[in-house]
Image 1 (cartoon, rainbow, N blue to C red):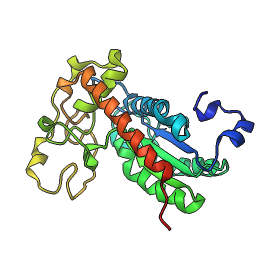
Image 2 (cartoon, rainbow, N blue to C red):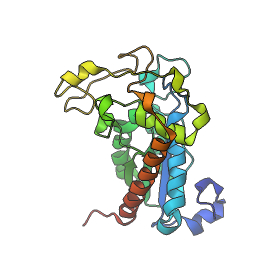
Image 3 (cartoon, helix red, strand yellow):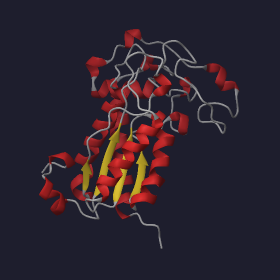
Length: 256
């Protein structure tokens, strides 16, 4: 049986979706990733991660995959023609409307699976708004925690492989090997930030930035050593980790 929400008929919602169901909403982006990657990177990773995750634990944990949101808040890349982006207000309104629709099904748990680091703070805000307005239990997870929010980045990237760097390029090579052009890639690490103790990616002081603030190519990291095998390992590790997280989400309560 398909676990794609949209494959259900109207009457099947009542028989298949229950308070114990987990609805999984992948959120990606269509934005520039430098000359070596296509615009589709974030929504492909979000969608493929969601699909693999549902294949892994969907039947066991009653997980249903919602249609992927492919366009989101990407205005840090607005300088680059081709980037498609929503305003923060539009993204929040969209999530509110989706939450309102979901609340009518009887499902109580909504998981946002975010493939675009630039969405993170807005999706965290949405968790509380959806909880408050519709009573949903809401969660945010990532295929990989963005380095700008404390996630891993290779040592040679100085913790700054945040956009089109080694890991993201490798995962995309695993998923879409024919769409990566490493011959067009180089090292684009803003090493000056490594001198700072606080004001840096993942530091204690955040700062506003656009992706071309650091270099005109608009990617941040060093993808030159990316391989599909490294990407496969990262992707499989991610599915294992997210499956375990889903088990906790399935039983999560506030302890009252």
